[in-house]
Each structure stands twice: as structure tokens, then as C-alpha cells.
Length: 485
Image (cartoon, rainbow, N blue to C red; front, side):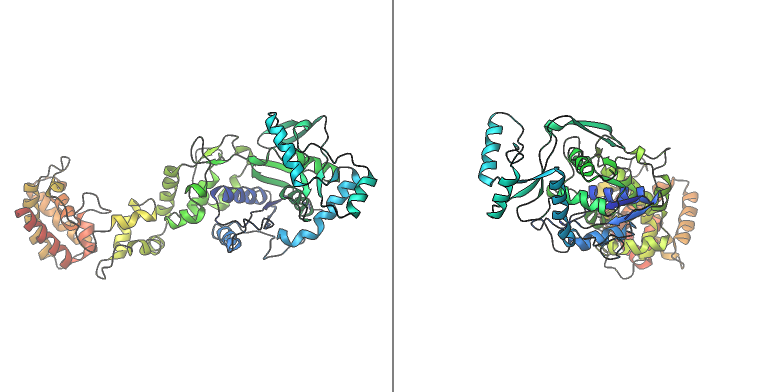
């Protein structure tokens, strides 16, 4: 089956969470297809049953859908080259391997486990890189038939040339040449008749018409053997785009095993899906110009694989926070309120506090939704605090001046019939003008009095409006008593 369009695939193994690097591969494959009006395919590679995790396929589906990386062909939507689940494609791989045997590009290997371990031990003792020694490469047709008839277990191995070189081109790394003598005769079909990952991958990519293969650069070392398979079959070699790894730091790769965040973890920590996707796009890829904030459609328009770096990408949590903060501030107030409410409710049980107004002051002062609970933990009750909190050099306040300021503030608040932020602001600023003092002299003590904290998502005026008149007055009176001591 021939295809005129660019066709890319994301082919994850259902082994649990969606690793940040996995999601980046999916994104780059999606962008490569969509930037050229091509087709993005989802293929589930589930043949490694030992690592299979129940429910992991749903995690893959849900993550791609949430982030907008919708596939054109796949297990649940079908397409012209299905099935799109590797375990449902098992019947064809051995037939393809036997074609290679006929062409002289593969051979039966009858070596048992004991012999292979013995060869490996000798090679390691000699300081050689372990590889198959070619023992079965030159069996005669009669010897092969005799062993097959006798039911001797076998695998089918790729017959890699022993001399010469293999050169392949990668969009990021350019032309790479490898000596054939350094390549192993890899197993294509295992003793149980199942294909190895490397073989199934090549056959699936060809039969699905994949034109561009986007994957991690850990596969660079396997690519020469892939190309030899393509050439042996007479198939067209796809365009290769090998991406640098995502690193925790200069020496450690991101790893769920080491507690590094998966996509699900980041969402659970209060990052927005669009911000996560935007940040992941920049992990190893540089757009033209200085801009960093992109929606998915904008990424499609900007996408150029030439911007992918050869160097490892370091996961920068501070930059992710910055990008997430930009997305939070871009939300409509009602959207932010809906996202913030569950986080506010982690510490706020009050039924009288104005949570919409609280969200209004939080939105400009929040980079990640998980910042919220700690910022609003004073809403239900003022925490215990030391009087030194009233001392602020910048505001020129002390506990003594703060007591005077709160005594000025209390009757003004008591007299207000309309307890809105606007009304409180007008009344207090009128008094500040009369007293000829700096704003902070009057307002900073009010913030501490109603929150028990030096830093809050809003100033004293906003906090009073959020708490309501009765609660605000109660807290100011309690603060005056505390300062009178």
C-alpha cells in the first residue's frame, strides 16, 4: 500500500505512566505530521508481556487526548493498515523473517543458552564486546533440515555483513557510518516464535507506510541494523529524526524509578496541560525568534525539526513554573476560579469567605495551582504569629506604630455600610491622606492583623473584602488586643 502523505507514528509500550520523554516523542511525531498536512498514527507495542501494566493503555489514550495529540489512525479509530496493536499482528512476522532466510539475509541459529553464555564469558574475559560469534551462519542446508526435523529449538538471526560499512542519514545528526564488524547478528524471531522488538518495529513501520521515524537517540546504535533489513527487503528507508534524551541534570536521565515527574504527576501537582505540552516542546527544540509561549496550533505552524538540538535537554523546573504561570494569567477569571477552587478547598472550609474574590487576587500571584493551599491557609483562622511580624523596615512599621494604625483603622471599617474592596480602599486612603502617612503605615498592619502572615495573595484591603465585615472586624480587634498585650 503506497501513501502520498507524510506518515508518522507514536508507538508506546503500555508499561505504566507517560514519561515526559515519551510525551515529547509523541508531540514531535504529531508536529512533524501535522506541519506537512500528514497522518499521525498511534500503535500500541504490547508484546513485552513481562512489563505490561494493566490500565496503561488507557493512560496513553487519556494523556494524548488531554493534550490534544489526536491520532488519525489507531486501535480505537481504525485505519487502512490495522490492526494497530502489535500483539494482534503476530502472524506475519515469522513469514517476513523466512523471506530474509530465503534471501540469505538471515539464518537459523540452534545455539542453546549454555553455549551462548559460554561464548559471552570468554569474550568478556578477553575484553571483547559481547556479540554472537556466528557459529550457525555457515550451516549447510542439510544440517539445517536435519535439526529442524529433529525439533531442535532455534531462533532466526539477521546475517549482518562481516566487512564494509553501513551509512545512514539522520535529520539531526547528519550522516553516520558504522563498521559492519561492530554489529551483532541480532535475533529477529525468538525461540517461542515471537519477533524481537527491533524486527517487529521495522516490519510494522514499513507495512504501515511510516515515512518519518521520530524516536530517542538511544536508537541510533540500532539504526544501521534496521537499514540493512530495509535494504534486504528492498523497502524504502524512512526519514530518521533521533531526539536527544531528557535529563534531570548533566549526568542523570529523567526516571520515574528515581521519583522524577511523569505527565500525570505534573498535572497532579497543579500544572496546566497546555503549559506542560508547551514546555515539553521546548525540551531540546528551539523555535525561530525569542518567543516561548505557543498553543498547539501555533506549534504546528512553527514546527521545523531542524530546531532540534543534538545535546541532551535538561528538565528545568523553574522554566516550567514560569511557562505555567503565563498560562494561568492568560485564563479567563471564571476558568481560573474553576481550576483553583479544589485547591482552595484543601485548606479553606469557610462558607462565608468570598472565594471568587480570593481567586481574583490569587491568579496574578500563582505560578502553579499547588501554590494555592499554603497561600490561603489563613482564611479559616489566623495562625499563631509573633509580634515581630509587624516590624517592617520598608513600611517603617513596628508593633507600636501598628497598634496605632489598627486603632485608626477599626472605627473606619466598623462604620462602612458597604464592605466592598472599593469602599474599603476609598475610606482608608482618605484617612491616610488626613494623617499624612505612607500607605504602608496603615495598610501593612491590617494585612498582618487579618492574615497572621507577612506575605499574602492580596493586600489588607482585598483580604478584608474576601473575609467579610464580621470576620475582618473580629480579627482586627483580636490583633489590637494582642498588640496591647
